[in-house]
Amino acid sequence: MILLYIIIFSVSFISIIILFFILKTYQLPSRVRKAEDYYMQNNYVKASEIIKKILENRSDYVPAIFLRSKILFGQKQYLLAIAELNGLLKIEGFNKDVSELEIHTMLAELYYETKQWQKEIEEYKAILAISPNNIVANNRIGHALFNQKNYDSSQKFLSKAIELDPSQSEAQTDILETLLSSREIDGVVVHGMAWPGFRDDDDCSGMVIPGTEDEKLLRRAYDLIPKYEKPLIVCSYYSERDSETVRNLIRDGKRVYNDVEDAATVLSSLYTYYSRRR
Image 1: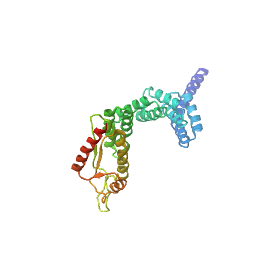
Image 2: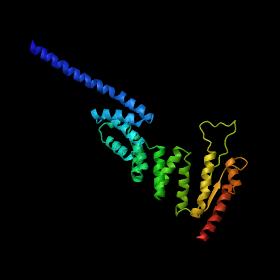
Image 3: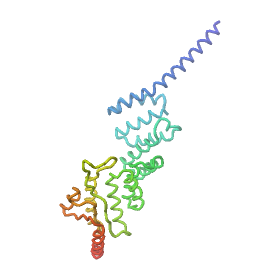
Image 4: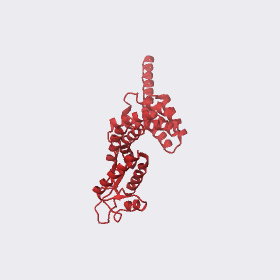
């Protein structure tokens, strides 16, 4: 009888232990959510305290590790955050709990903050391997290659960024500068800009009015002329009567052509002029 009691007691004790660990496991997501609430309130101390306790018992708990990296990022402890995220990528099955895309995006931002440009580009390339149409990745790689004077390669990524989001005016400026810096190109005609806007009766569903961005881009384009000493001509379908952008540019002494043939004639003359100056 005593042996039976011992067996029953042992089984009950083991069951309690198992139940305890099951309950602790089920509490983990709610504890991480509580830490996330503190993190969203910028209360990094409270969030860190909760995450520390979780990881003391489950050092490989992916959601907690990821949140700790975000907390470290928020505290500007960039190198520690980088180490956390790179360690996270080595945990088998990590992507069941955290998006790999989100990890690479954070790493790219961290490498940018720590001025590790090449590693930043590597992360954006990893992002493109997962999501080829990622606008930020195409844009950042294009700008990085442009700054490295790798103009041909940069144009590929910048063009993709513009294709995905035509409002990427900085990318458009870099492409213009890429063209002007090329030894194979003698001059550039920018055509089709300065959209005038819509009247109330126009059907503009699904379209963007880029007037302000157009003007910024064209002004930056004019500023590039002295730098490269190459002709750059701006053409628009619209006159100063139709387009406020064209009107503003002409008011400031910038010439905008409505006829492409006229623009080509002027471009030829300007090319001759700049060639003689070199």
